[in-house]
Structure formats: C-alpha cells, structure tokens
Image 1 (cartoon, rainbow, N blue to C red):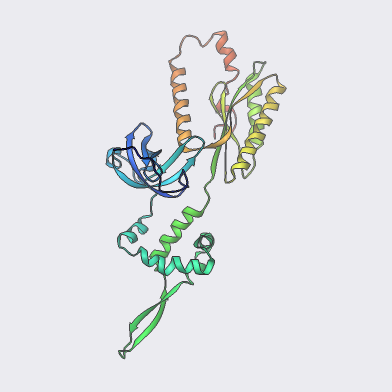
Image 2: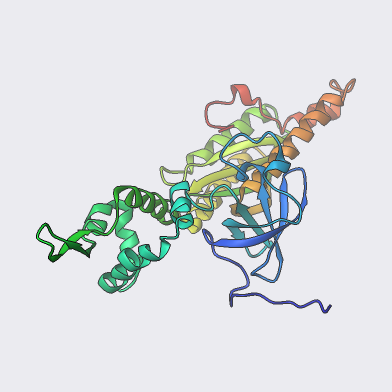
Length: 321
C-alpha cells in the first residue's frame, strides 16, 4: 500500500485549544508520543500530567499504544516542531454529557446561530461572555408550541439555555477565551573569580530581578555553577522577552563592574511544560553527579569554580522562585 501524505486542513499545525484526533505511537518516561491524524501524522506529546484529572495509578489504564482518540492542543512551537497535547482537557464533563444525549444540534439552533446573527460572529459574543455572560445568554429565547387549558395551541417564549447548559458553556468559553500566561526563559553562564566573587554574583542576580515589573516579574535560579536561568511569566510574549533582555543587561553590567563575565547560552524564548520538566531532570542529574563526587572538595580548582555558585538558601527571597 502506498505511503500517502495528507492533512485535512490547510494549516500545517493545529491552533492552541483545538480538538484533534491522535493515534498513540509509543510511551516514554515523560509521556506518550502520538501522531496527529488530521495533520499528516506529525508528532505530538501528551505529558502524563495531562492524561487525567484524577491521580494516575496506572498509565496503561489511561492510554494505550495504537489507540485513536480526541485530545486538546495545549501548545504549538512551530520552530522546534513541539506540539503539547492534553487528554484531560478535551471537554468539560457537562458538555460531554450533552453531546452524548444528542442535543448538540439544539445548541447551534438556539444559541450558536442567534449569536452569529446578532453579533456578526459568535466569537464577538464569546468575548463578552467571559466577563458578563448574563448580558448575552439571558437575551436568547425561543418559542415553544403548547396546548393550553382550553385545548388551543399557544406559543410560549422560554430561555434558550437551561442553567446547567449555561453554566457549562460559560465555564468552557472562559477557559478557552481567557489568555494563559506564557513562561519566558533565558539561560546564562555567570562567573566572577575576584575576591568576594559569590557576593558579587548575588548582587548581579538582585539587579536582574529588579529589572522586572508587576506585569513581568523576573526570577533567576541557579542550575549548577556557572549556569543560571532567568524566567518571567506574562500574557505578552514580546514584553516578556524584552523584560528578560533588560534583566540580562542589568546583570551583565553588575557582574562586569567586578571583572566578572556573563555569557548568554540561550536567548529569551517562550518555553513549555516539557522544557521545564527537562530542566528539572537536568538539575536533578547534576545534583546526583555532585553528590557522587568525593575527595576533591578542597582542591584549588573546586574553589575557583565555586566563585560561580550561590548559596541559594541565604541569597535572599525570590532567587529560587
């Protein structure tokens, strides 16, 4: 049989919050690797934390190799080809029950289509529903034909959505429409071999954190001497990257004043939960490697390298974040 390449949509990658069909290829240490069937079988990943809302006792009971099922797109990094997916966020339970009952068509007729007629596009109505759902949903009604006490047919105007349906719709619309903060990270190497080099590094770290603001607070964390990571969370990617660049500049100026050196290993960029897990695993590995080293704590080389290390426990609040 020929190996056909095909995707159902014009776009090469799905958008965040889209529901897509996947097939599970294999299960690794961090999660399950899958193929997106509607997007030419490009690879995506479901982290174990996104398999279920409940505590996972057995991964195999939640996902199996070869199985096809719907998932939600959490994050797409087109440059790296990363697609993070979620099984536990596909649909709220109430909406799922509504679909199973076969009344989703009624939702379109009574709610979806009227919103298009009134607002030009349902998306415009959804933006209002995020902050003021009653002003939109309470205006939607439809007519029901009933037989009156006298046997005559009467028309009654009733709300388009029950309280249960309205609650489920508002919850899902808010989840999909409310922007989620991005995590921005930069990786640097920082050293200072002068007298009191550790204190100078601490001061440079404080300068970096001071470059943040309420919208983009900056935190700096030691990975292993001389590697550090700077992070911020923000709704505006460009603002977050600019803030971290400002923090790096402040940190560089401070450490160079004391004849130290700072090298940017990875420029500020948006990172995913997968990147955070990889960083945590790297830090754990370095920690284990350091514990295995013995007998050379007093060497001259160790003392020099230590100039790049920070006593995090006494370095002040916010450094480890």
